[in-house]
Image (cartoon, rainbow, N blue to C red):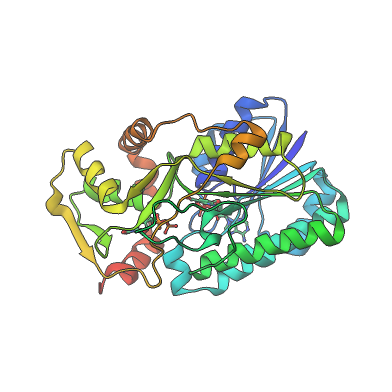
Length: 339
Ligand code: NAD
Ligand code: TYD
């Protein structure tokens, strides 16, 4: 089996590559990544010399390059993680989100149509459903919840999902889509909530909590997400959407306090800053469909996963300190300088 993994130098894609190397040691994995600010080739060092692994620095929007890569390698399966993934950046500059997340998806599916494929899997997000009110804990996103996006990021992901459905219905492309809740774990870029707070707390820097920090996210350990995608590739039904989540809702402020406690740092580091524009209140996945259909259940409890994630960041300071580069600093200044 030959699997083309896009965005494999990013957070979830790299974890997926490591997961698949262990789970299917004889499968060939081809990682396609543009290496944007979020892609880090250092992360893939452990598999770089593996004869079953190959890396190509390619932009998924580059039709010519993607088509010639397909012609050369003839993948059986494509799993598309490649995306611009940070909501705050999408608020600053939506254009690149539309290019990569929508046009890139189209290019990949066109290549799949041209060269044939057993499966195209689109890695999507629960953010396509918009948000839920904080005072209705009885409500959850199911696969039937209408798409109702808030940010340019989520709008671009929802657009790609609709395009996937269209390619399935119109051209019969064997597509599956997964919509997962917030992931946490090793190799997450230190602009997202959990790694940013760990990095800042370690350096005794202020922890910028948007608004009151009462927004709720449903957190899943990244390896559980990888296992769900592997299961969907194996047993999922073409044309089907699968929601992935572990019923683990947390308020941002509680996550931040938990990190401070684990690092033995004072809560005085918490700084409430201006809220994100259009900030989604609550995400909460109902994962019963993937459980009933495919038997998937998350394995890592949040209490364990968050401690091992914090430990990982402490033990891999070089990894994230190397990332906090000029570009990141400029971005950081723009984002937090005047808040
Ligand atoms: P990430 O930002 O850490 O990684 C994205 C990767 O895609 C990077 O390696 C980047 O270099 C690459 N990339 C970006 N544009 C590209 C292009 N034009 N061509 C080729 N490669 C390109 O993102 P992540 O958090 O690992 O998310 C991966 C996927 O999972 C995304 O599609 C995201 O929407 C989805 N998702 C993420 C979460 C989460 O909590 N992080 C939850 C649900 C779904
Ligand atoms: P994030 O990790 O960006 O993921 P998403 O917006 O896709 O859910 O943010 C998670 C939550 O944390 C979200 O409610 C915004 C909040 N947040 C902060 O309060 N401060 C920060 O510096 C960041 C990056 C996020």
